[in-house]
Image 1: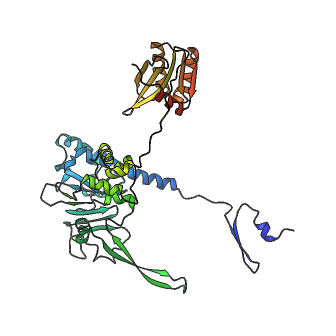
Image 2: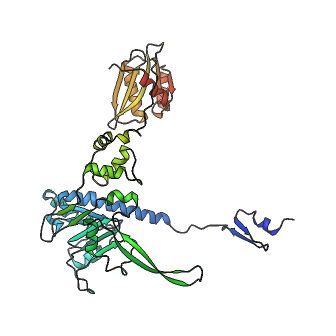
Image 3: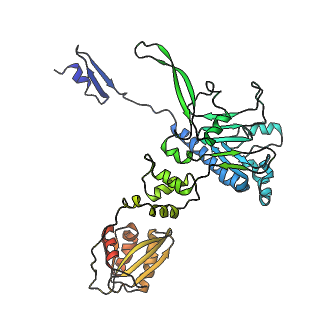
Length: 423
């Protein structure tokens, strides 16, 4: 007869068990039914739509109505954005003159209606509209969730000083008010130093099961962040806008391109990567550096050249056909455009036609033109869908043209072995 322990492990709800020395068995079972009552799809949709609205606000409103020399994005979150303008009243002082009428007709698609206080108070709580939440004359942006806005015209009722809006992720504001100051944030940028804050809290001691007071230091800097953010943090930007001055004072740390590439490439955590990967990282710091400049820098480094993967070499042998009208056909790509190309195996006569895309119908129409201009007895292609779909194979069969397929590796071998193509 089976014991109780064995019988209890047979149901599908059994997860695990632990047997003790005194014969006691502790079992873990899952629920027979799990009710998924939380509408997580709704929260995901709201979150994604909020991010979409922030992108629409930048591309369709700010970047559309204002010249890029008059504004600079400092920070952006899911539902907020910090923008620096070169004038006290950007709307409508900085709106492009040719778009001023268009702005007046469509501004309430982005901002609350302001023609009376009652309507303004109602539209302030309308989702999708943007309102001014805080205004200041200076801001230091270190990284995501680490910034401070100060020199505000608004006065704090408690401290009787200008209001300050600040964010330091992972640091308690109430316990570190003496540390989280504009001067310390500026010193991180100017002097490239680290300042430290201390968090206070309680935790349960495992030995005594009592509450104990804990202190946990936290660092705010530009060099202690994770490696995936290092490129954006290594050369931060400090933005200062003087009230009453229409010029945007933009200060940034000056660096040399070669020094930047060496710093990013020889970084043990994120470096020793290909030219394309290095270009993606350096673009986060300076978007003006091109891929060609990165590749040229690669060529000057002898230690990098030693680790370049050598291309596979192929023994040269000629491929010919007993049929004079045997053709090979494949798709080629040049600067993002598709080209249907064909070559006669014996004569090396070539055919090339620029097509809009590589869809099956587009390739079939180009193939029909190719067959109309050239005599084709045998056609060899790869096994891609653009050639082996039902419409293409049916049409070729109606034209009595047999089609042969091969693998991509053999097609590459043919291209290397057959030599030049005559046009």
